[in-house]
Structures are given as structure tokens and as C-alpha cells.
Length: 432
Ligand code: DLL
Image (cartoon, rainbow, N blue to C red; front, side):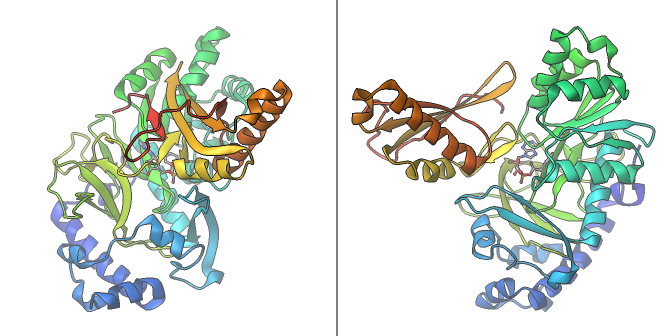
């Protein structure tokens, strides 16, 4: 079902006009209410009257997560604090979170975007949906929850962390749809198979995202659970889940262009790229009130298709993600920057700056291993001392990134020391 046909199936010309109007209004609002942006625009001699249509977007400055850090936590708010009704956050590069603020209207629009995504997957108000994304600062839980409630479906706010209970409720409450990360759903599938319970579930749809996944994973999920699985994309800074979602034709994720203006740029030269070319996705929020962002560099590498889709929606389609233009890793749906791990290691006495992160996917679960060279003296001590140090390192990493790593302590000069720029990460998952 198409939730908002007037918008989702709008003629491209009409859409460009709407985007132009919303962009001009947004730039004006940002200029007058956000000192950070005003200064940036003044520095390049730009005034709001220079922005009249979508074509003028290229005149605007980019926003990066370094800007978010500099303006942390409220520096990019475009409304008085009293109008903010929600704060969400996700991990940042240097331990500080990327904070997003929402007005009541922002929450309404976010909910509608998620409702559109759920409808695209076939979910209706007659469905019972289990939200298996984490609730809390992460946008997955509350984002999916509000969208499902807005649709009128029955929502079970499961959150993460208890697969046994999730399965019991899935069966007992006759759950028909689930929203969670794709790797977690495969884990759930395995658990159901192990208990011989696949025949007992009533599941029909899954809306999976927050991490990169492949067609092969989709096929496995669909086959093993006998359901239909859909991809949902989003990021905290822009809103959360529901920026884009794929329809039943799976030809890319329709991005809700009436709220988000997408561009593709060359991450090196920052020059705009043509439709179909792969580069970095840049998004301007057209209607966001709490924390509007102009030309936000998502660091996600992809291309855009604007051709007609058989589903009838005219909104451009984000093609399969080809990775990122920075070093961020998404492990079990959690954003992890190697620099966060490095900072954590530095806090533990006895460690050295030589470490190596290995990420892999085994039995559909991400593995996260950190090897670290520690001072020689630990190896001549009792085993207990070494174990104590390993626990300290493991705790420091867990605290810093929010997920547990398998820690391996090694003797000095064990890890490869390269001549040039030291490589600290090996991602063995083949998700492109
Ligand atoms: O992951 C929001 C979300 C929650 C999306 C639930 C979908 C479902 P962040 O924690 O800020 O927000 O992480 C955003 O995760 O820039 C991508 O690199 C990656 N990502 C999110 N969805 C997808 C997806 C949420 N469907 C970062 N495919 C983004 C590939 C994804 N990567």
C-alpha cells in the first residue's frame, strides 16, 4: 500500500518545485536561527536570497560530523530549547555522541516516514509488529515504534537482548511483522530452527536495516522464515530509520525526497556527480525544525536512480551501499570508529598504541576482535595478572563503543608494523 500517494508518487517536476520552496524556507530559517550556519554562510558571502531553487543547493556549504562535534550538543538547534521534545544520539568519532534534537513536528514527520516504509513492506494496521531494535538513545527502537503506532498496527516494544523471550512472544502473541537488524533476524532464525519452532510463527514481513546487508542475506531470511524482507535506511543526524526504504521490487531504497534532498558528490573533490554515478550521499533536511542540516555528508557511498519504479513511486532510489568514505564500522548494527577503540585502550595502563581490529561475520553474527600489544612484563607475571589486564581492556572498549570485543593480548612486536600509515582494521565481511 502507498501511505501518502500524493507525495510518494508526485511528478518529478512538481517535486523539484516543492523541494526548491522548502529549501529556500529552510535556508532562511537556518540563517536567522543558527549562528553556526549564519557564520558559515557569511564567510562565503551567501545570503538566504541567493537560494531560490534546488539548483542553488551547490552554493551552500557542506555539514560534516566535525561540525556536529564543534556545535555539540545544541549548537545546531534552530528553535528555542522549550520546543525540543526529544533527544536521540549515536556514536561519534571522539567519544562524543552525535546528538539530534526534535520538535513535536519533527517526530510527526519521522513517524510518517516510518509509516510509509512499513506500508511499502506490506504492513497494515491489522499487523502485530515486534520492534527488535534497541530502545533508548539509538533511533531504531523509538523510530520504528512511533511509525508502527502511527500506522495503527499493534506494537510490541521488544528492544534487544533477550532472544528467548522475543521468540516466546513472537509465537504467543502471533507476531506478523518484525523490525530489527538483518544479522539479528538471521540469529533469531537459527534459534527458531534449533528449537524446531519455525512452523509455529505467523511472521510475514521483516523491515531490516541499521547495517549493510546483501541480497544473499535477504534470500536466506526470506527462505528460512518464509517471509518477505525489506531494507530500511536512516541515520541519527538526519532523523533515524525511515529516510529511505525499498519496495516490493527491491530496485533500491526510495528516499523520501519531499523531506530529504539527496545529492551524490565525489568525496575527494566534493564535486557533484551525475545520477547513476557512485559517490558519497549528501542529504539536506527540507522540513526538519529541531536540527536542520544543510548538505550533510553521510559518508555512505552509493548512487541514485531517478527512473520510474514499477511500484508507482517517483521518489529517487538509493542503490546498494558500497561502503563508507570514512573508517566507521557498523558492527552488530552499532557504529564503531577505530579511534574510539584507540582512546579506550589508551586509558588502560600497560597497553601500547599497537592494536589491530578484526571484524568478520560467522554464522551470520558479526565478530569483533581487538588484538593489542601489552608491555613485556605482563608475560612473565602470573596468568591472573594477564587476565586482569584483558578484562580491563575489554571493559574499556565496551564502555567506549557499547558492544563487547574479544580481546587478545599479545607480546610487543607481534602485530604487523607497517612502514607508512599503520593499518589498524581488517573487515573480512563481504557485504558489497
Ligand atoms: O542506524 C538508524 C537506523 C535504525 C536505520 C534502524 C535503520 C534501522 P545510526 O546509528 O546513526 O542510525 O547509523 C547510521 O548506519 O550512515 C549507515 O552507514 C548505516 N546504515 C543504516 N541503515 C543502513 C542500511 C541508524 N539499511 C549509519 N544499509 C548509516 C546499510 C545502513 N547501512
